[in-house]
Length: 466
Image 1 (tube, helix red, strand yellow):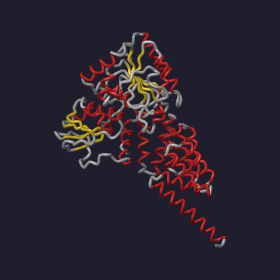
Image 2 (spheres, rainbow, N blue to C red):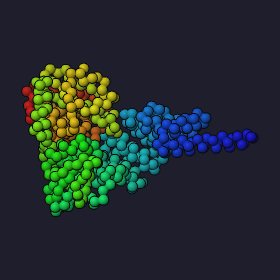
Image 3 (cartoon, one colour):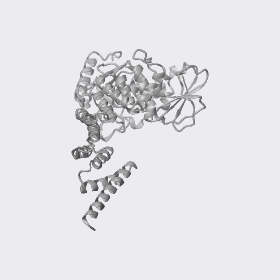
Image 4 (tube, rainbow, N blue to C red):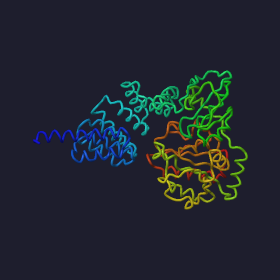
């Protein structure tokens, strides 16, 4: 074989290996794809696309450091660097380096000023830093270039809602159904908010526990439209949602549903009821634990402590995309656990290993959660507590919906529902918000919580004070 033929053969072999790796990646066979592409870049280190795909593989597998290293190698190759800079920004943001992510997205747009994906991602990084006006401007630029860019529309809704612009925010929020169609592929028509006139409606969960609890406040308003209300939800919420006024039937997913004429996902109700900051349904409580459940937990908890009972939830679901920012380590609550006259009681059903760091027994935290079967039990425990302290997870929503005193601990870049720069919540009148002063600074948050708790205890812990 002559040198020219060898060169052609080598080039063909490299190309074949790249496309095999790409095909495996597209099929979700990440480990097999990685082997092909790692071999390829070992033979030929200047193939930018191979490094880029490797970065995506590492990122999907949770290895952000390797992902970042691969994106930087792709950038150094100098080919289509705008894509690699965009991917680098995504990995940096997941690592918590929002400023680095912002710089990477801006660099991507310097190279390719008409790149909607980078505009969308830059908008999100700016939103994380509280720069809402600039964030909104970048989302709008992305949408101008690509009017059907569902992710940009949905992200725009978060920025608008965070800012308090509910009218446009709810309209943009509906793009979620283009981004991820409803899980329930139902033939019945979507409800348009008009009078039901005796028809039955299925109102169903489409997101996590906290969202379901937050939006369940709209169910009584649906019932007022003169219809029969059937609620579809996760099995863990079924018994609790029976307590909502206006509910006729509650079915868990997978159970047989009574006949219904129209349907509506819960997250669409705020738009249908034209919710503004001044018209959020705030009649509390709208969820209730039955007397038997409350009494059961009163006996269990009362037998163990006579101190001030403080419920604690320090971590959300490990599968949540923002879990790294919204959850914190248990050991950070040690100063509160050591306060005289205070008894911490766990409201943490699952303890992700990342946030375990110290055992509950080391902090003398009472834990009954192994006995908890569903959210009705959790509600029964909360009804027997003096206060709930929780990160942004379903427990905070549950305590607020029960009308209990709840202090919610928020990351520097909060979810849309908590807005910015305020200590109260228009969604839950009995809730007080404690915000990180800078990204990742949970210590300052807990110092502030401890100070306020000490002050309240010094005043005899007035039950009516939030």
